[in-house]
Length: 247
Image (tube, rainbow, N blue to C red):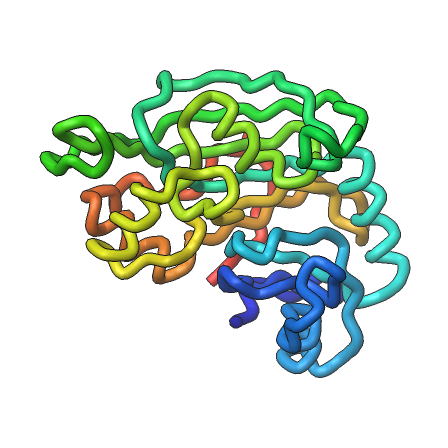
Protein backbone atom coordinates (compact mmCIF):
# COMPACT_ATOMS: atom_id res chain seq x y z
CA UNK A 1 0.00 0.00 0.00
CA UNK A 2 1.26 3.49 -0.80
CA UNK A 3 0.33 7.05 0.06
CA UNK A 4 -1.36 8.87 -2.82
CA UNK A 5 -1.99 12.24 -1.15
CA UNK A 6 -1.30 13.94 2.17
CA UNK A 7 -1.89 17.38 3.63
CA UNK A 8 -2.31 18.64 7.20
CA UNK A 9 -5.83 17.19 7.55
CA UNK A 10 -6.26 14.27 5.14
CA UNK A 11 -4.39 11.21 3.92
CA UNK A 12 -5.31 9.06 0.91
CA UNK A 13 -3.81 5.65 0.23
CA UNK A 14 -4.09 3.14 -2.60
CA UNK A 15 -5.76 0.12 -0.96
CA UNK A 16 -5.02 -3.15 -2.74
CA UNK A 17 -7.77 -5.66 -3.45
CA UNK A 18 -8.13 -8.31 -0.74
CA UNK A 19 -7.42 -6.04 2.23
CA UNK A 20 -10.03 -5.15 4.86
CA UNK A 21 -10.14 -1.52 5.99
CA UNK A 22 -10.37 -2.51 9.68
CA UNK A 23 -11.41 -5.42 11.88
CA UNK A 24 -14.78 -6.82 10.97
CA UNK A 25 -16.96 -9.80 11.89
CA UNK A 26 -17.15 -10.47 8.14
CA UNK A 27 -13.66 -12.00 8.28
CA UNK A 28 -12.67 -12.84 11.84
CA UNK A 29 -9.51 -14.66 10.79
CA UNK A 30 -7.97 -11.67 9.00
CA UNK A 31 -4.89 -10.13 10.65
CA UNK A 32 -3.90 -7.45 8.08
CA UNK A 33 -5.85 -4.23 7.76
CA UNK A 34 -5.58 -1.06 5.71
CA UNK A 35 -5.92 1.10 8.83
CA UNK A 36 -2.87 -0.50 10.46
CA UNK A 37 -0.77 -0.17 7.32
CA UNK A 38 -1.82 3.43 6.72
CA UNK A 39 -0.92 4.36 10.31
CA UNK A 40 2.53 2.83 9.81
CA UNK A 41 3.00 4.80 6.60
CA UNK A 42 1.78 8.06 8.14
CA UNK A 43 3.60 7.65 11.43
CA UNK A 44 0.61 8.89 13.42
CA UNK A 45 -2.93 8.08 14.47
CA UNK A 46 -5.56 8.11 11.72
CA UNK A 47 -9.36 8.18 11.61
CA UNK A 48 -11.11 6.25 8.80
CA UNK A 49 -13.86 8.35 7.21
CA UNK A 50 -15.19 5.83 4.70
CA UNK A 51 -14.51 2.27 3.62
CA UNK A 52 -14.03 0.11 0.58
CA UNK A 53 -15.08 -3.52 0.43
CA UNK A 54 -12.27 -6.00 0.97
CA UNK A 55 -12.32 -7.02 -2.69
CA UNK A 56 -12.31 -3.43 -4.03
CA UNK A 57 -9.09 -1.49 -4.61
CA UNK A 58 -8.37 2.22 -4.91
CA UNK A 59 -8.65 5.52 -3.12
CA UNK A 60 -9.17 5.16 0.63
CA UNK A 61 -9.37 8.35 2.67
CA UNK A 62 -8.36 8.93 6.30
CA UNK A 63 -8.47 12.01 8.52
CA UNK A 64 -5.47 13.15 10.55
CA UNK A 65 -7.50 14.73 13.36
CA UNK A 66 -10.88 14.37 15.04
CA UNK A 67 -12.43 17.51 13.56
CA UNK A 68 -11.46 16.58 10.02
CA UNK A 69 -12.87 13.08 10.60
CA UNK A 70 -16.17 14.57 11.78
CA UNK A 71 -16.40 17.02 8.87
CA UNK A 72 -15.68 14.45 6.16
CA UNK A 73 -17.56 11.63 7.86
CA UNK A 74 -20.77 13.67 7.89
CA UNK A 75 -20.41 14.27 4.16
CA UNK A 76 -20.14 10.54 3.50
CA UNK A 77 -23.06 9.75 5.81
CA UNK A 78 -25.27 12.36 4.11
CA UNK A 79 -24.24 11.22 0.61
CA UNK A 80 -22.58 14.53 -0.24
CA UNK A 81 -19.39 12.93 -1.57
CA UNK A 82 -19.14 12.39 -5.32
CA UNK A 83 -17.42 9.05 -5.99
CA UNK A 84 -16.08 7.48 -9.16
CA UNK A 85 -15.18 3.86 -9.79
CA UNK A 86 -13.88 1.86 -12.74
CA UNK A 87 -15.21 -1.64 -13.38
CA UNK A 88 -14.80 -4.38 -15.96
CA UNK A 89 -18.14 -6.04 -16.64
CA UNK A 90 -19.48 -8.90 -18.71
CA UNK A 91 -21.34 -7.89 -21.87
CA UNK A 92 -21.93 -4.53 -23.50
CA UNK A 93 -24.23 -2.21 -21.53
CA UNK A 94 -25.71 0.84 -23.23
CA UNK A 95 -23.40 3.86 -23.55
CA UNK A 96 -24.76 5.40 -20.33
CA UNK A 97 -27.60 4.97 -17.91
CA UNK A 98 -29.04 5.11 -14.41
CA UNK A 99 -29.79 2.05 -12.28
CA UNK A 100 -32.63 2.90 -9.88
CA UNK A 101 -33.18 -0.28 -7.91
CA UNK A 102 -33.83 -0.48 -4.17
CA UNK A 103 -31.52 -2.67 -2.09
CA UNK A 104 -31.86 -4.18 1.37
CA UNK A 105 -28.90 -4.06 3.74
CA UNK A 106 -29.40 -7.80 4.23
CA UNK A 107 -28.47 -9.36 0.87
CA UNK A 108 -30.23 -12.62 1.71
CA UNK A 109 -33.69 -12.51 0.03
CA UNK A 110 -35.03 -14.49 2.98
CA UNK A 111 -33.45 -12.15 5.50
CA UNK A 112 -36.43 -9.82 5.68
CA UNK A 113 -34.37 -6.64 5.29
CA UNK A 114 -36.18 -3.48 4.24
CA UNK A 115 -35.23 -2.34 0.74
CA UNK A 116 -34.02 1.26 0.52
CA UNK A 117 -33.62 3.52 -2.50
CA UNK A 118 -30.35 2.93 -4.37
CA UNK A 119 -29.14 4.64 -7.53
CA UNK A 120 -26.01 4.25 -9.66
CA UNK A 121 -25.03 6.10 -12.83
CA UNK A 122 -22.73 4.51 -15.37
CA UNK A 123 -20.90 5.52 -18.52
CA UNK A 124 -19.29 3.07 -20.93
CA UNK A 125 -15.63 3.86 -21.63
CA UNK A 126 -14.51 0.94 -23.82
CA UNK A 127 -15.67 -2.42 -25.18
CA UNK A 128 -14.03 -5.55 -26.57
CA UNK A 129 -15.23 -8.75 -28.21
CA UNK A 130 -12.92 -11.75 -27.90
CA UNK A 131 -13.22 -14.63 -30.41
CA UNK A 132 -13.43 -17.18 -27.60
CA UNK A 133 -16.36 -19.27 -26.38
CA UNK A 134 -16.11 -18.40 -22.69
CA UNK A 135 -19.78 -19.07 -22.00
CA UNK A 136 -22.52 -20.43 -24.28
CA UNK A 137 -21.77 -17.92 -27.04
CA UNK A 138 -19.01 -18.23 -29.70
CA UNK A 139 -17.42 -14.96 -28.55
CA UNK A 140 -17.08 -13.07 -25.27
CA UNK A 141 -17.94 -9.41 -24.79
CA UNK A 142 -16.64 -7.16 -22.00
CA UNK A 143 -16.88 -3.46 -21.20
CA UNK A 144 -15.04 -0.90 -19.08
CA UNK A 145 -17.42 1.32 -17.12
CA UNK A 146 -17.17 4.48 -15.06
CA UNK A 147 -19.55 4.14 -12.10
CA UNK A 148 -20.96 6.87 -9.86
CA UNK A 149 -22.95 5.58 -6.88
CA UNK A 150 -25.52 8.19 -5.86
CA UNK A 151 -26.37 6.30 -2.67
CA UNK A 152 -24.31 4.12 -0.36
CA UNK A 153 -25.92 0.72 0.12
CA UNK A 154 -24.03 -2.47 0.97
CA UNK A 155 -22.24 -3.86 -2.10
CA UNK A 156 -24.33 -1.45 -4.16
CA UNK A 157 -22.22 -1.44 -7.32
CA UNK A 158 -21.81 -5.20 -7.44
CA UNK A 159 -25.51 -5.82 -6.85
CA UNK A 160 -26.65 -3.15 -9.28
CA UNK A 161 -24.46 -4.45 -12.10
CA UNK A 162 -25.81 -7.95 -11.50
CA UNK A 163 -29.34 -6.50 -11.60
CA UNK A 164 -28.84 -5.23 -15.16
CA UNK A 165 -27.19 -8.55 -16.19
CA UNK A 166 -23.69 -7.07 -16.54
CA UNK A 167 -21.91 -8.42 -13.44
CA UNK A 168 -18.44 -7.20 -12.53
CA UNK A 169 -15.70 -9.62 -13.53
CA UNK A 170 -14.11 -11.30 -10.53
CA UNK A 171 -17.20 -11.02 -8.33
CA UNK A 172 -17.48 -14.44 -6.71
CA UNK A 173 -20.84 -13.62 -5.09
CA UNK A 174 -22.75 -11.73 -7.78
CA UNK A 175 -20.77 -12.59 -10.92
CA UNK A 176 -20.44 -15.57 -13.27
CA UNK A 177 -17.89 -18.26 -12.51
CA UNK A 178 -17.12 -19.02 -16.16
CA UNK A 179 -15.96 -15.45 -16.83
CA UNK A 180 -14.11 -15.21 -13.53
CA UNK A 181 -12.20 -18.40 -14.40
CA UNK A 182 -11.41 -17.07 -17.87
CA UNK A 183 -9.78 -13.95 -16.43
CA UNK A 184 -7.78 -16.03 -13.94
CA UNK A 185 -6.51 -18.35 -16.67
CA UNK A 186 -5.87 -15.83 -19.46
CA UNK A 187 -4.88 -12.68 -17.54
CA UNK A 188 -3.67 -14.10 -14.23
CA UNK A 189 -6.32 -11.99 -12.52
CA UNK A 190 -8.11 -13.46 -9.51
CA UNK A 191 -9.44 -10.18 -8.09
CA UNK A 192 -12.68 -8.21 -8.34
CA UNK A 193 -12.18 -5.72 -11.18
CA UNK A 194 -13.63 -2.74 -9.31
CA UNK A 195 -11.52 0.26 -8.27
CA UNK A 196 -12.28 3.61 -6.64
CA UNK A 197 -10.51 6.26 -8.75
CA UNK A 198 -12.06 9.57 -7.71
CA UNK A 199 -13.54 11.43 -4.73
CA UNK A 200 -15.04 14.91 -4.62
CA UNK A 201 -15.98 16.58 -1.33
CA UNK A 202 -15.67 19.73 0.77
CA UNK A 203 -12.23 20.05 2.30
CA UNK A 204 -12.38 20.29 6.13
CA UNK A 205 -10.01 23.30 6.17
CA UNK A 206 -12.28 25.84 4.51
CA UNK A 207 -15.10 23.96 2.79
CA UNK A 208 -13.64 24.43 -0.70
CA UNK A 209 -14.63 22.04 -3.45
CA UNK A 210 -11.87 19.42 -3.44
CA UNK A 211 -11.20 16.62 -5.91
CA UNK A 212 -8.81 13.70 -5.47
CA UNK A 213 -8.12 11.41 -8.41
CA UNK A 214 -5.84 8.43 -8.95
CA UNK A 215 -5.41 5.80 -11.66
CA UNK A 216 -6.30 2.17 -10.88
CA UNK A 217 -3.61 -0.10 -9.46
CA UNK A 218 -1.08 -1.97 -11.58
CA UNK A 219 -2.97 -5.28 -11.54
CA UNK A 220 -6.15 -3.60 -12.78
CA UNK A 221 -4.21 -1.63 -15.41
CA UNK A 222 -2.53 -4.84 -16.62
CA UNK A 223 -5.90 -6.42 -17.38
CA UNK A 224 -7.05 -3.25 -19.15
CA UNK A 225 -3.87 -3.32 -21.24
CA UNK A 226 -4.49 -6.96 -22.14
CA UNK A 227 -7.92 -5.97 -23.42
CA UNK A 228 -6.55 -2.99 -25.36
CA UNK A 229 -8.01 -0.39 -23.02
CA UNK A 230 -4.96 1.45 -21.67
CA UNK A 231 -5.99 4.71 -23.37
CA UNK A 232 -9.43 4.53 -21.71
CA UNK A 233 -8.07 4.54 -18.14
CA UNK A 234 -8.14 8.33 -17.76
CA UNK A 235 -9.37 10.07 -14.64
CA UNK A 236 -13.14 10.05 -14.03
CA UNK A 237 -15.13 13.09 -15.11
CA UNK A 238 -15.79 15.70 -12.45
CA UNK A 239 -16.94 19.26 -12.93
CA UNK A 240 -14.38 22.03 -12.40
CA UNK A 241 -12.94 22.08 -8.91
CA UNK A 242 -9.64 22.19 -7.10
CA UNK A 243 -7.83 18.90 -7.60
CA UNK A 244 -5.59 17.14 -5.14
CA UNK A 245 -2.59 15.55 -6.82
CA UNK A 246 -2.37 11.78 -6.53
CA UNK A 247 0.60 9.61 -7.47
